[in-house]
Amino acid sequence: MVEHPLTARGAATRARIVEVATREFAEHGIAGARIERIVAEARTNKAQLYAYFGSKDGLFDAIFFGSLERITNVVPIDASDLADWAVRLYDEYLRRPDLIRLATWARLERRPAGHLVEEADRLDDHKLRAIAAAQAEGTVRPGDPFDVMALVIAMSMAWSPVSNVYAATAEEPAELHERRRALLRESVLRAMVPDPAR
Image (cartoon, rainbow, N blue to C red; front, side):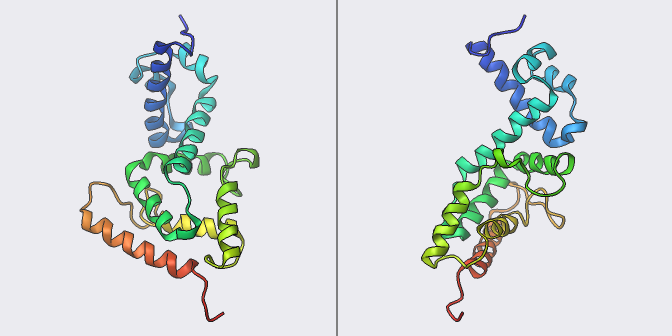
């Protein structure tokens, strides 16, 4: 029997599916994730999963776009302090490495070039406007606001789960994280604050 998605029981089932599927997709990617494992661990069935999400791709989309919204809401941009924004992103990657892995699988399996998501699904307009406003005020270096944003995000991901050099974890010593935060903060400041000599 398929539960109505608005019931409390249905909402709990849907939440379990999302939680389990987030781990499954983060670990195995889109192609490698298995619906059988998801429904078994979520204590539901395929009919229920498909009633909520339509398909395996629909389930990934729900989780992936939810993860993008989470990053946007939990780590809002402050264009007047891009160094602090980068450090807060670093901390979020430590808390939720699965979110970065989801984006990596989307890049590998869906969109190997260009923007990570379709134009209509992008959530960065407000970030670009904030950066452009800070540039107009002279507090952020000139340049394409998208390129500025992309560089700050890339710097924040230097030790993230997608680093090809070193992936940090929350279990590492606090002083190590503080050292990285300090380096990240200083590096973003140097890269993004306009040079008064120019």
